[in-house]
Image (cartoon, rainbow, N blue to C red; front, side, top):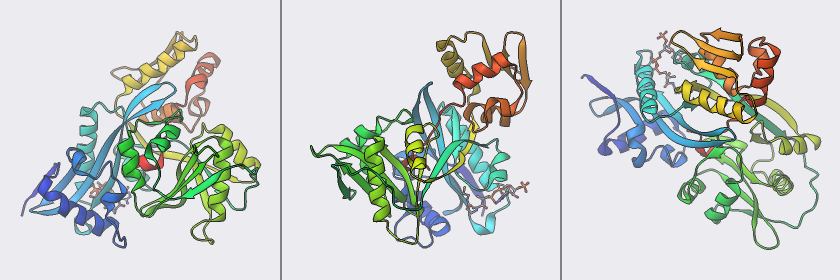
Length: 368
Ligand SMILES: CC(C)(COP(=O)(O)OP(=O)(O)OC[C@H]1O[C@@H](n2cnc3c(N)ncnc32)[C@H](O)[C@@H]1OP(=O)(O)O)[C@@H](O)C(=O)NCCC(=O)NCCS
């Protein structure tokens, strides 16, 4: 029988696709993988799924989910890619490569500026132009936090007001645009602990989410609120953690300096890592945002551009040329600092340091 695709699945093929994904990726789960990704693996996002089939049988799959993300230097359109899998008997034949290329093509057609995914198969994705980039700080809580007693009430339930959570979420400087329906769906993700802190007037002042379906058990991957209330909430979550032998780790963007400082001063251990694997899809569009941010800081002569042959970075006569896509991804999103990538002249180094890396962050609910 001949193979078909990559293409989007038909509505009538979705059930078979979920069965395939559950069999391959969630053999021991009591829930469907579609419940873990309510904004990606649902009918309304079917046009962003890609499958290769043999008759009715799915052999390979990946999904992309476009997001608009707010950052201090402007909004970006970003494609999260996930649930990448090829059936055991058909691996090593290039099927995932075809499926991923089709997803990337769809992401470009949807004007996405970057693609991001989470994986441990670094070399597999490097072949497709992805590079480990962006920053993540993991804060490992090993003991009780001495957080000041506060007049707060903690709730341990997902039955909470989605509007209230969204209001606190929207205070983040970096995050995807979400509507209240998104939050409602995310609150229904199985195998997840939703904890909230409320002040004496009944106002939500902090939230923290641990676990997400089969992933992120023991990790607080979504949180919000003021540092004081949040610290008290995390302290409560540690004392009442689901399994005492497991620790609790909060993952945070590099720019959450206040929270990181507060927790590390309480003895919490810090581990620095990457946000994910990133591939730039629209270089010029991102460069234009960086140049605009530079101009707003009074740096009018920053060169950051792509020519037919290479990338050019510098100021005045001091222009550095490179063909390394990898260097550009790391320069824009870190965690390497500009001077670790190239010894720029002092004036360029100063300019780049004031704008880069771009503080990118994807909250756990949005990871695909
Ligand atoms: C990883 C996976 C999706 C690859 O699917 P696939 O259809 O076999 O991929 P392809 O045939 O397109 O792979 C092409 C290349 O990647 C290489 N590759 C495959 N798996 C790899 C791995 N785990 N690490 C590094 N390279 C790998 C292959 O050797 C091949 O290289 P070649 O062309 O130089 O021979 C598949 O092995 C799989 O489903 N694994 C289980 C689920 C999983 O881990 N998914 C990834 C989640 S991020």
